[in-house]
Length: 539
Image 1 (cartoon, one colour):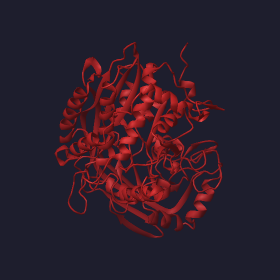
Image 2 (cartoon, rainbow, N blue to C red):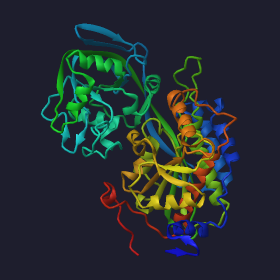
Image 3 (tube, rainbow, N blue to C red):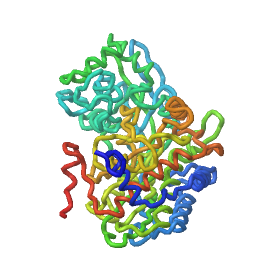
Image 4 (cartoon, helix red, strand yellow):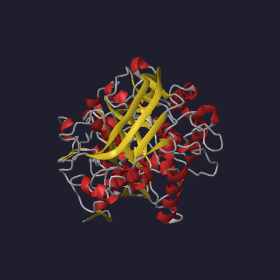
């Protein structure tokens, strides 16, 4: 069927064109200027509770006010206080790994990572290692079933049983499920009573290189306040070489270990002769960080809310690299997403007032475990039942102009049809993320809302570049992942055009504009795990 000479598939895009009489007023130049400011050394890496937070919050409040927003936090303020506890491991932590009849001293940040989970001194001596497969629970898998893990340390594989299996074992094929996240593995080990857990690192299975986890060993951890005692004394990563050697010392190859762990009835098995000793001291410091929230009140349905979010934090002034640079500026992650948030706010405020309210939230402590967004989702300014949808802005790489937008974690909600139509309006295709095994849908600030039932979108500028195609775009992504992601080298570059960033922000604006101007009430797709949490609105 053709209408007005256009194929029927173009009808959703026509609706967007009619809703937006002009192209979205998104400026790559304004985004670039804001990123340059936020990623400058003057903002000291935007670490929560560090010197850079005060300057960051002042900048965001001024930018939101200048854009035309009103304070959207509690008691009509710009800020929502987020109580946290910072955990700093003190110098002198020691680990000793014994296997194959020999004992090896491990250097944190080189041979292992070590996150001590309770304040004060932790000392564990010669605790046995137990291979717990993928360390996950669900779909018939429970490696800890019937195993007494008290006084033992779990050593587990990254990702989930489907990864590298070549078939779907009930975990969505290549796409990582939430049970395969390292945080879920830590929770499963804690429930089983383990004293600690080590994950064997592989670049592909983890979706990031050893450099990232090793350099992250120097960073402080943060947890919600009040601090609750952790049943796990520690968690950490082992490099692939060491993990393979430990398994091999008991006659177990890595390939054989993976094959055994893919069997649903697999249970954790001891690694005879393999033990670990740990000694370290952690200081706990309470602090209050802040979400920054602005609102554009709706004209006719102000109680209903479209929520845009981006995290303002990076990793602060922590852990110098080989050049001595200790500021992790976070130019891409996530000064760029924060600048997009401000630019989308400008676009809304410069146009006709939407029917629904639009909230723009800059979250704290995403890098510490989505803590700011999770706090808001647990203590929302507007009830989550009135939040129409969440649109997340957390770009992965600053790219030139592209032919596509990449959807993260697709197949979950009808909002994806709106996203596809918005992309088409700007001449862009919507394609699935190329690396679903990375589990990005669970790794950014929309997820605390999704798991509470609010439909949420996460997407990125595509890597099918106008100049150079997918090969050129993928090369830029690989280079960033290999050496700059979460590193001091994630710095602003004057040569960036932000053309792809503007495309991403433009699509985000169009999706939110349609929702804010209309009466649609998005739901999760039938069968989705979050669908029971979202009730349809009465007509």
